[in-house]
Amino acid sequence: MRDSCERCKTPLPMNSGDAMICSYECTFCAPCVAGPLNGHCSNCHGDLQPRPKRIKK
Image (cartoon, rainbow, N blue to C red; front, top):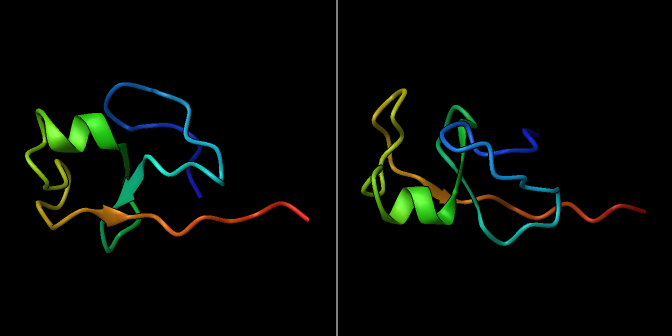
């Protein structure tokens, strides 16, 4: 699980609600997805969806 946005380097910890991923697990923050990326991965051009949260035990 990547810990920062691939575009702007914003930190995205495992429990972040702002993390978005594509089917290849490219990771971006919600502001980049809503803005410049227009909902699509800049690497594979696939749709970006909310990344599931992982809770530390």
